[in-house]
Length: 303
Image 1 (cartoon, rainbow, N blue to C red):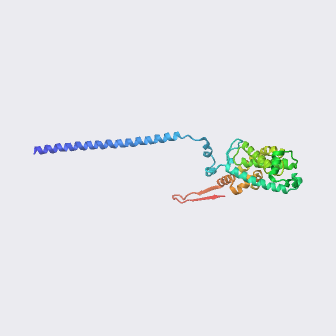
Image 2 (cartoon, rainbow, N blue to C red; image 1 turned 90 degrees about the horizontal axis):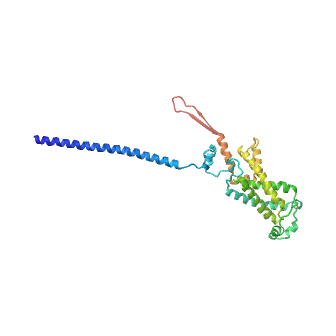
């Protein structure tokens, strides 16, 4: 009996020792898991912090970060030059639109040539019988390559009113597409000189010395004034002196190429003004809830 009791007692002590060891092991494992999770969280947070600090802001993105709320929806689209502060050197060219403008101008030049040919001879100084006696391309070669530019004797309003205005329209054709002042001057010179004087018009007469200088130079000076005026009109939602009718008439006169083409191909300036107007005239009225309940009424209106 004493032997059995001793064996049972020793067995109980051994089992108690095993249970203590197992409990100690589980306790250590639990503490290790908690420490591991905490350390892992610290590692993750450190990695996120390092990643955040490694990404430096782009100064070019600051414009979109501080733009008005009504421009946020247009941030994914090409911005209009009229959204930026006035600058002579800033360039945000829209090449697709300027090529479209150039194609329309080429068609307009051909139409203008037809109109000029229908005018009386004293208005254009053209001798139709002499012109029509020479084939077109031979006539162009004589006027450009053989004879060259001459001092013309057109009417005053042609040389010193219509030609500078045409140059200003060519200038605005590029300026409103995001080109800076110097790029727009080059575009105006190219259109007025290559396309018109040495191009379409050279099929009818020799290039004009006055037009080679007056159209691009004077026209570009007037065009920059047109650009500044249009910026003010666009900033006032196409209003001038408080009148939308006057504002739209003036805008079509000072930037005919972009405004006319914009009727069919879209106009970023008008989209900008619509977004701004919608933001200014959209408001909400919220009536207070009934005390002790979740009932309320909200009313939103947009002009």
